[in-house]
Image 1 (cartoon, rainbow, N blue to C red):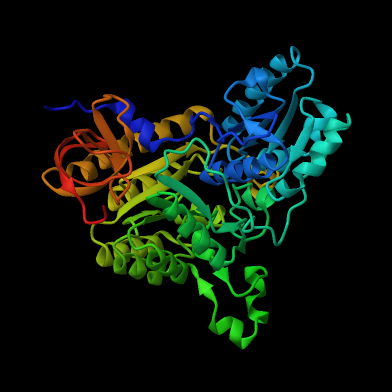
Image 2: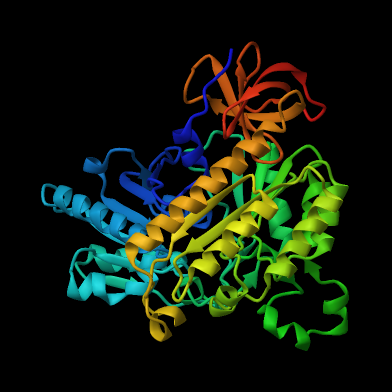
Length: 491
C-alpha cells in the first residue's frame, strides 16, 4: 500500500516552534495527600528538569494529577528562547488564574528560564503567581512552599556554579517506559548574541560521570531501552573532580590525567549497557571533536544521529551571532562525520531574519542546506530576546513579512531534503525501537531508527520496547513505512 506524502506530518517533524506543553504524571506515592499539576514547555532539558521537580516534591507530600481543577500547586516550567514561547506561557497562566478564582487554596508557580529572566515582574508588578523558581533553585522548593503556605510570595532565581542535581533520582514522568533523558551538563558559556540561555541557566558545569553511569544502569534495570544524554552543549562536558570548565587550567596533574570529556563519557555509557541505545543533544559545531564521532562509530549502541545547529549559512551573520565557527569549518565537520559514519543522520537549527541579514546572506543559508541536505531541522524567524547582546546592540531591522517569506523558503527546502533522505531507506532493512502506537493507525507500531527517523509497521506479535528489524517498503516525506522481519540482535 502506498501512503501519500503528508506535508503536515513533515512539518510536525521538522518544526518545533508550536510544540504544546506536556502535562506530566507521576506514579502516586502512598501517603501523599497534596496534588501537583506540572506542565512543561521548550527544550528537552525543561522536561528533564520537571522530573527532578516532581521527585523533590514527592518527598514533600505531593502526588501529581492530570486534573488542573483539583491541584493544590500548579507549576509551569517555562522557555524564554523565543517570544512565541513566552506568550504561550502567559496564556496558560491566565487559564490557571481563572481556575484559581474557584479554588482559592490553589497556588501557582513559574519555573525555568522565563522565571529566571522575569524574576520579580511576575510577583510584584503583574501579581499573577505565588512562586518563582529559577532552574538552579529547585532544591529550595520545600522552603519556598513553606513561605507560600504562610501567605507570602516566594522567589529564588539565584544561578549556581555547582548545582547539577546529580544527587537526585528523577522520576520518569508520563513515560513509555522505553526512552528517558539523562542530564549531563547544565548552563552554557557560549555567548551567542541572540540567546538568553547563559543568562537564564548560568555557567557550564558538568555532572560526576559516576552518577551518570549509576542512573544509566538504574534505567536499564527498570526496563528502559534508550537514553538521551542532555545538555545545552554536550560536547563541552568535562569532569575532573568538580568546578567550572574554565578552571581546568588550575587542575592538578592527576585531575588532568583522569579527566573525563564527552567522548570518554559516551564510551563509559556504551560499555556500561551494551544493549541500550544512546543518543545525545545538543552539539555545538565549535566544540564537537572527531573523537566523539570516532567513538560513535566504534560502538553499535550509540545512535548514528547528530543534531548540529548551524543557525546561518552566512559567515558575516555567523560573526554577528558570535558563533565561533565559519561555514567552511562547518562543512569540513560535516564531511568528516560522513567519512567516518556514512549513514549518520544530521539535523539542524536555523534562524532567519537575524539583524542586518541580506538577501545574499539568506541565499548563502539556502546554499548550505543544499550542500548538507539535512535529515530534518528546526527553523525559526528571529525573535529579539530582552537582555541579549543582539537586543542591546542591534536593531531588529528585518520586516516581519520578509522574515516569514525567508522562513517559508527555508522550510520548503528542508521538506525536499527530508524527503530525499527518507527515500534513501526504501528497500533497506533498518533497526527500529518500538516506542508507541502509530498516530494514524492503532494497528501499527511507531518507533525510530538509529538516525532518528520515524518508522511505522504492522504490530503483529511485537510489543513496546522491542528492537525489531524492519524492511522499508515505502515512505512519506518524513516517515518510513515497512514490515517487521524479526527481532534485531539487540533484543
